[in-house]
Image (cartoon, one colour):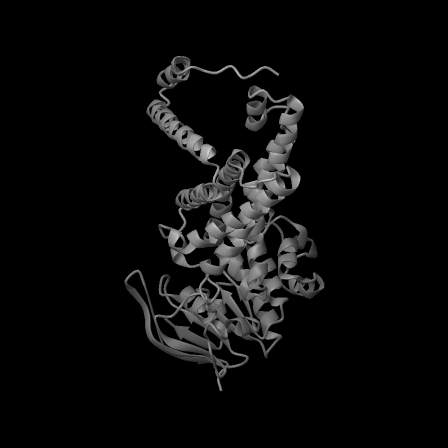
Length: 197
Length: 266
C-alpha cells in the first residue's frame, strides 16, 4: 500500500483549471517533487495534501486512511512542513523553536550540516540573508523528526553548496519521505519521483 | 459644593462660533476636513439630543425590563458597528460577539454595581445604563482594533498559522501568537492611557462628576472604579469575542473561512 496516494484530483482557481484527474502515489522513502511552470498549482497541490486547501473533486489517502475532517489532525501529526516565505514567521530561530516546543539540541546538528553557525539561532531574521533564513527554518523543520516532510520550494534561496548540503542531509535518512515543489534542476534531479503538472 | 451652572440652549449655540477657528485652519491648510466636521457635529447634536429625550424617559420609568432592553440594544449596536468597522462577517460573528458582550457586561455590572458600589437595586437606571454604556463604548473601540488585528493577522500571515498547525501544534497553540498580537494592539493604548491619567489626561467621568457638584475625592474614586471596570470589561469582551469567534471562524480542516470578511481578502 502506498504511503500517500491521490485519485482523480482536480482543482480550479479563479476559473482556471490547475489540474484535472490527477492520480499518483508516493511510497515510503520516496523523494518526490512536483514540477511545472509557475502558476500550474504545485504549491496548491502540496497544500491539498496537507488539508489546507480543499480539492474540487477526487480524494487523497495516507495509507488506507482518506484525508478528511476526521483524519486531518491524526495525519498532521506524522508530517512536517516548510512553506514558502519563511521570513514571515518570527523574529528569531529561537522564537520559532519556542513556538514549536523544540529544544536547540534537536536542530543544532542539522544547522551545522546545512553550513550554518549555531549562533544563527539567536540572530534576528532581519539580519540573516535569504539563504541563511531558509536553511535555518529547514534545519528546524527537519528537527521535528517526522516520517514525512513537505518542502515548498526548499532551495529557492540556496546556492549550489547549500543545495548539496541539504540533499546530503536528506539522503542520510532513507526512511524519510519527502514531498516537495521545485524549479531547481539540482533538486529535481535528486528526487526519485517527479510528478509533472 | 455648589450646584452646576446650567447652559442655556442659546449659549450652547453661541459656543459653536468658536469652531470658526479650526474650520478656518482647515480651509487655510486645505485639510479637506471641514465638511466631515460639520456633518459630524450635526450628527452629534441630533444623536445626543435624542439620547437626552429618551434617557429622561427611561430614567423616569426606571423599569428593569426597559433598562435591560436598552442595554441589549446598546450591545447590538456595538456589535454591528464593530463588525462593520472591522470588515467582518455579521452572519458568522454577530452571535458570538453578542454573547461575549452580554457575558462581559453581566460579570462587570454584577461585580461593580452589586458588590462594590453595593446598589440595593442593580438595574437602577442612573447607574446601570451609563456604566454599561461606558463599558460597551470602550469595548467596541478596543474590539474593532483587536478583532481586526486578529483576523487580518490570521489571513495575511497564514503561513505562520499553518506552519505551527501542521508542524504539530494544537489549533489553540497555533492561534496563540495571533491572540497575543491582537490583545496587545487592542489593550496597550488603554494601559498607556491609565498610566498617565491625571497627569496629561483628565478623564470625562471624573470631570463630569466634579462639574455635577460631587467632591473631587468621590469623583476620583468613581473614576478609578470605572477605569478598572472598563479595562476588565474590554479585556473580557475581547478574549471572549476571540474564543467564541474561533468556534465559527474555521472550517473543519482548521483553515480560516474565507467568508470571515465581508469582502474576501486575496
